[in-house]
Length: 265
Image (tube, rainbow, N blue to C red; front, side, top):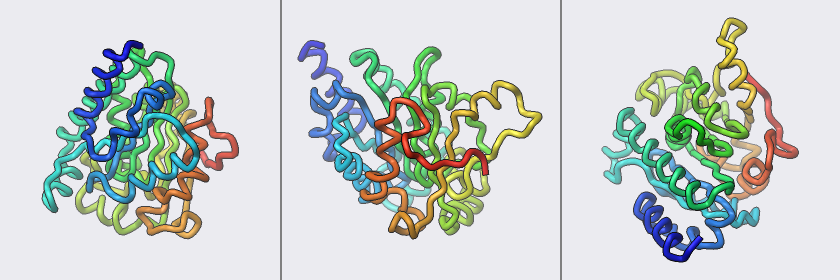
């Protein structure tokens, strides 16, 4: 890849993602090794997603590691809008998919993962769904995802090579059960989030396509105690990401080596 083409891509990525601390994680060497897009919750860039990146750095992952703030940068009101604006959320996800396609065009064969925390978990799913036919990301890693437990993952799973790893925490009741019943998930439905109870398993009468797709869904239950954080941030601590999340990024096939998961609920 020429330096001119690399600069064009880096400029496009920085314009789409924002320059807040991302520049040094979008170097030529890192982009040549792969891309991990970190999608924050509705609050935007914060200590939670910075901790995710610190955990990946501790795991010596030498890939591009941008934090992509996808919502409106409006204090207080913006947080609620980001949670409830279903159309805006899907448009933001479609732009992420375009960015990934551009990266794949200039770096063919490099691994691409999306890590989404809270509302960002829903955006990661939407982004996978927005990938054009014939294009896939390697995998999605969802941490405390604010997307309905009943959401149909068939299309998103079909746009991944390895699947979706959903880290959920039953302790996360305040935000991902009560909060999502009242305010809704980022997909617009009101009810418990997959980040609290996992995704619904297809029934025996589900279409064969859905049954086959869900074979690539890996449910990983965690507790706030084992992760050493709060109920909604346990999966984002740098030490937890180093120990439990990074293997899903570095493994060529899933489930991750040594990964503990339970399919279904």
